[in-house]
Length: 289
Image 1 (cartoon, one colour):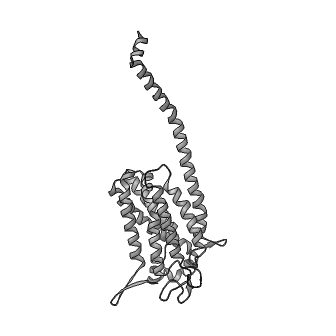
Image 2 (cartoon, rainbow, N blue to C red):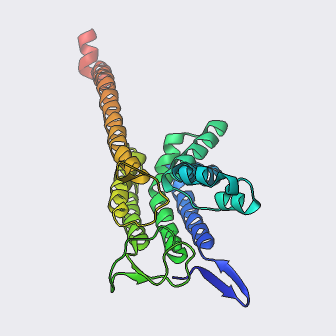
Image 3 (tube, rainbow, N blue to C red):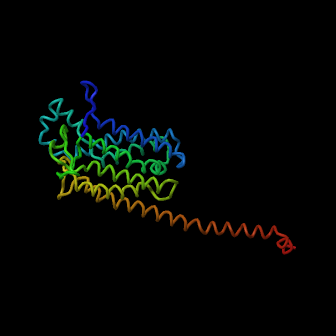
């Protein structure tokens, strides 16, 4: 739709700047939220920078794995020429690889500087779908991650995309995923507007797994890897939804167990306070006499 911004004879791809804007907005919101979770603002910023490195590496690695058959088939060209190597390194990314790579990058920072990883997740995870949603707008501008053929008025046509088929009406699945991600962001921000014992990452994995399963039905780009008729992202979504449920279940079990252990202690402490108060009262002093 708008793959490039033109300044005279210079053309600048839209995808990169839009992704950058998404990360900047996400970082600002996370930094604003971090004190209520006990995370210093500077540590939140640096952890997200580590996470961004993980996003790039993880997204690229999973993209290469999903496109491995083609890479092997054309390996002589891809690894034998500078253009081929550039096409591998400069090609697409797979979101789930970027997600798990980003979480790993943030975890490494937390381990290095002794920051509570759980508290960092509570701070950052609700913002992830906002970053992702803005990024999908960049995908729409570039024409990547395009949808199935669809008649207008819903279907939209690309005319100068290097990724999507041109002059064919396609379903704007990028915009659908952007809208669903922003909706998920609003839900998570509302749930975690104050510190809660519910793991945000569990809620996010369930929510985004459902979003991705819906959107994958409208995807038409082929370089995504398929097994038994399902794309790589569909298989991962099928796994992350129960993973999210498991995280919530484990957290609930631990909370119940902790409350069961603490309750007798609290009752005992309350009883001791009542006995001490009774002993200090005039009636208690008389009884001692």
